[in-house]
Image 1 (tube, rainbow, N blue to C red):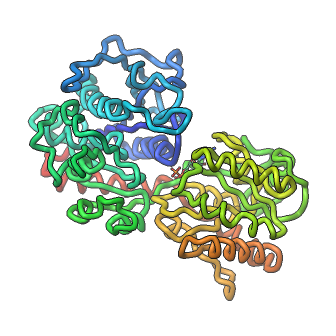
Image 2 (image 1 turned 60 degrees about the vertical axis):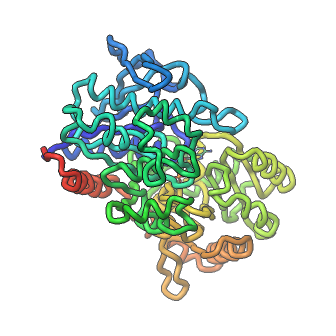
Image 3 (image 1 turned 135 degrees about the vertical axis):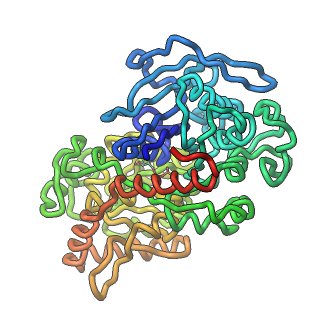
Length: 491
Ligand code: ADP
């Protein structure tokens, strides 16, 4: 039976994006819609979302914010591009009328992030009522909207509007938990009796992700391996014990790739197109990339990186290894932004090695496509990786990933076997500069000396199936299972 599904999220490609969460929220609803479900998405109306292209709802929405009182916001409606999926934008200038999503230009979190995302969560609940949309599934994403699951079990528990509704919390990243001063309980307004270590409290603070973990009907992570890893102290970021109490309600579903956006055969952002049967276009992309990044046009392997420059992604280890890496006859290309030290450090490396290392600090979606297409290898030494999209894009673009074998990287990259030539990339275990350098060396050696193996791996990687259609089917199963476990009537 078709379901009514409400996505509440802080990011959604192409409206607002800092990472993979946006790709999921921008893609999955379209595929669920194709399966016949009525899916709708609720997002903040950030400053860069152009209101003139959207329809304004005539009535404002009232959002009770506990001790702050009721706040009134505007609602704008649009569609997910290329689909009929409605997207509702919560327009509240004071909270969301900013260029950045979560942080100041200096990189520190906005001081009112607690109120901003409690507001978004509560607004999603209120909006469902205003629209007379009776969801069967309330799908929350990360800490930003985890409070929806809490609300469903508390303030709205006896609300007839949500009588048939179960909640799903998808964890895209355990590291970010939305932990704040305990006075936030007065804004959440669910009652202080919920401020205990089983539900919301952690070290006398409010932990919104924890609230979602305890109150959601079921949970998912964005890759199967990560769903196991977060139950351990190394990856659980102190919530592993809480998660362990719910491990039977936790699934791991691998993200798909939006093949409309990421297909080297049709990608309009590339100077030339290509597919697994003919890589001529890829060679053109490589030359164009070398020119664009100011590197000499030479036939050497290009090792690329596109990433948030944060500790999760292992850039401190790349920094440690960089001189050894650049001692090889290779070129490296980096696109990213994040921690200030990395901007300076890799800027200096580009200055020191003008013929070998090129970097662009910033966020540039079109360039990220040209890099995926023009490079030979893609380096991703993440400390932890809930799913990771770039290693999947890389494979589809014939760019072999070099990865630390954690989370989604372990799930999606098949290690090279020198004896048989099998594999789709190069993996290492134990995140050290030495292991990283050795593995890049291994990939570079393969590129130079085992060309037939390298080419066969490229072809194999490009033929992988990362379609969202498969993942969407699994989400559908998760939704039906959650309804069953919640004992709510099923449609
Ligand atoms: P995460 O969500 O942890 O940042 P993912 O690999 O899941 O990592 O997703 C990252 C997404 O953001 C990819 O689509 C990637 O191409 C994109 N991205 C990251 N940094 C940049 C950048 N500087 N410019 C363009 N795209 C970027």
